[in-house]
Image (cartoon, rainbow, N blue to C red):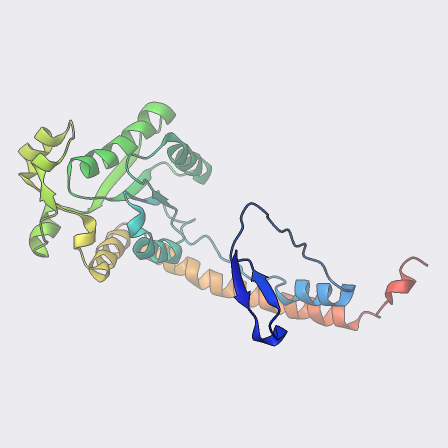
Length: 252
């Protein structure tokens, strides 16, 4: 707390509490009558509908990214395609992998495709491989196609990316294997401009999905939205035509 002099109190000392998490305050959402509650509920009635735009795809497709810093770039893409996305935050724990396995099984699809986005360093290479390996070992999902979308050596060369570090700076059991395949330097995904990463990920998706089926789903979503809006207006009109009942008459 801090001591404040409030001019409005003409010299009276007032206390202002900045923050005190040890004394939580609970405020209940209540209404003074039924009318504002009804209006509130009807305002969003049948709103917020979204169609599963990937339901007619032959494969179940998901995004997997190594780092939380990529969320702001990848989440809008994930939302646009209604594509589930997992952020591994390093070596992904088993719980998100189990959830992914369950989503795949519920989809009824025969093949699982995972687009992976990770640093080009020993950990980034092994994280993606470990993720798919555990899907096979722990959940017996064998038909997994893990595609490394970024970061790749070709992208490092094409975009002339700045070196992120040296392999000798890494304490990783896989660094010698990395050295044999990629050399001494390591690179971070963030070295790519966000716009470049967006194009890379979107291109990978567009080259994989059945675009005709996807566009058909978008068209159907628009039809669904028009149907729901018409239904909403019909129900609202009906609700507005109902005779009002005073609150004190309900119990009679």
